[in-house]
Image 1 (cartoon, rainbow, N blue to C red):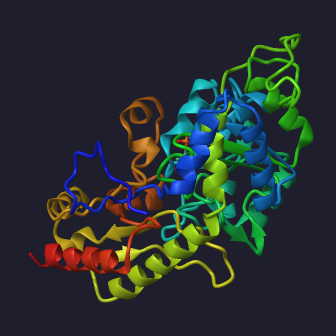
Image 2 (cartoon, rainbow, N blue to C red):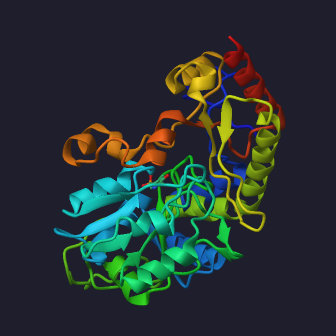
Image 3 (cartoon, rainbow, N blue to C red):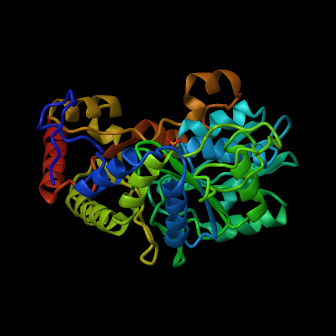
Length: 392
Ligand SMILES: *Cc1c(COP(=O)(O)O)cnc(C)c1O
C-alpha cells in the first residue's frame, strides 16, 4: 500500500535515507485503540511486552517512551552516580553519554574497531579502573558486538553490562537473538527496524532489576504491572521511591505489536538491499563499506554505513552529502563522535588522536538510504548517483 504523503516538504523524487513502513493493518491497530476508550498504558502495552519477550527470548520486558528513557532508568536502578565511570564508545548516539553525564558519572570512551565501529574486549580493557561500574556496548548498524570476551572481562572485574540494542532488533550472536540474555535496550524511533512513533523497550533476565524499572517508569508507585481488572493501576498504589513518567501508551504499543509481526520481512528486505549495495559498490574505489559480518551472524541491517575515502575522493564528507542531496538522495550521519561535539570537547580532556579509529570514522562516515520499502532500482539509482558525483 502506498500512503499519501501529506506533510513532506521534499519532492516526490527525493529518496530519504530512512522511512518507516506503515501499512493498513498498522493504521487499523492504532485506530482500534483510539476508539476503545483506553489510549494510555494498558493491555496493548502488556501484549507488546509479551511479544517482545517471545521474539527475543528474554524473560522480561518493559515498554517505555524511548530507549533514552530506558537508559535513564537503568543508570538510576544500577545506582550510577558521582565518582563512577561508565565505559561506552564515543561512536554512538549522544543520548547515552548525556545520561551518564547527567547522572553525575564520567563517560570513558573505548575506541572502536576501525571497520565494525564496535568496542572490543581489548579496547575496553585499556579503559578499566577501580571506578568503572558499567559497560554499555553498542551493537552497531545491526551487527553484534563480540559479547563473550566482553562478558568474561566484565565478570572478572565485577562490572555490569547494559547492551545498547537500538540498532539490533532481529540481530543475533552465535545463534542467540540480541536481548535474550542480560539487559538490553531497544528503540522504536521511526528510523529503527520497527517503530512506535517514539518508544523503547528494556529486555532483561534480571527480575529484581525489572521490578525496580517497573516502579521507576511510573512515579515510583509500588504496584508492578498492568491490572486487567482496573485497566490501569490500583488507585491505592503508593510511592515507594520518587520515579519518572516513561510508560508506553497503548496507542503506540498497538503500532509496535503490528510492526513486530513484520520484523522478519522487514529485515530480510533490508538484507537483500544491503547485499546489492555491497555488490554494486565493489568497483567504487572511494567508498569503503564496513567489514562484512561473519557468515553465521544474524545482522538486522539497521543502517547501510559507508566511509568516504576523502583523500581519493578529493572532497569532504559534507560536500559529498550535499552533492547527493542535490541529486535527490538523502543520507544520514551515524554518528559524529560524541567526544568531538562542543560540550564534550569543552568538558572532557581527550587529546586528539586518543581515539584513533573513532576519529578516522567520524570524519568519513555516512549512511546511505536503506529501508524496507525501498526497491532494488533505488539502490541502483543511489550507486549510479554516487559514481556520477565522484567523477565530477
Ligand atoms: C536511536 C538510538 C538510541 C536512542 O533511542 P531513542 O528511542 O531515540 O531514545 C540510543 N542509542 C543508539 C545507538 C541509537 O541509535
